[in-house]
Length: 417
Image (cartoon, rainbow, N blue to C red):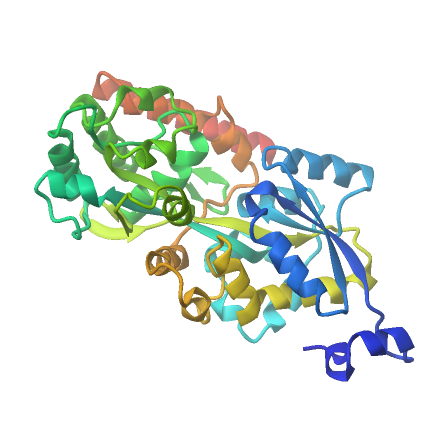
């Protein structure tokens, strides 16, 4: 609550009493992935009759470049809901405002998503605060499990169990496969494959992104896990060239036993494929444990945003963090980013969202100011390595692919510093 809310909002702003801040309007961008929840959140905030957010939705594949160009030319928005992985890059470039004092002043600061805050921090200062969230999970087709003689309500808890379930489903034949992944999609695999490595004790970057750690036993084991299922025909051949177009659609088609996916799939499956019975569980490690990629957006403020707009932007952020705001987000496709109100925000929704929320709360997000060059680039070292290694004919080829990726990643990191 702020003083304007306490004294009556619109009436006070209209009277313009001395010493009271005036209502402000600020510009706000969001990528199109947030087109379901952001307009509803903005409408609810604006309806309070005080500060106003002017929302612009930008196509997801254009937002980063559009913002970079706008920031360079002085036409950037006041605030932006930014894919959290890009926060270190824009902070390093000096294009974001330091939000440390405001963030740490919030009484529920310790309940905000740790993964979002980690990648929102650069050089010890907070430049990005948690806003929207998505988590990677494992989904399985209960109908196919039952047909294969498996317990449809029993989720696999390690790689051996995933493999056993995939074998049983594949044995059904008739173009039915046990497992699916998008084998030529860098973003898909950092989101769904890397948690297998984390859950097994491995990492991808160290020293705040200064060191690449590709050639670890955990990475090798996870690659061989996937490669073994490919070799034995548990994965359809189309996986090798899938750059993400079938990331969701393959499982939704009803002939895939298990696939790593995201929490977004819960709503999509419920709405578009109501007859498909499915389960949701955590992405397991080799011998147990589990992890998740904590995805979504951080909210950031442009470095040149006028100070008089900051109270309005902060009021919007606090509204988004309120139980009401978290409920609006949860009802429209985003997981809560406050763990102390997550259960309240998800009340009345599909119970499987709570599994995804727990996954997100424990999730990780790789930290790198050059994430796009390393991971998301269509010809970058991450997907080049994985595509080559997943479908390799020999273990030597896997080792070569990993070694080359290690060298290229470290070279890109070093050249950016």
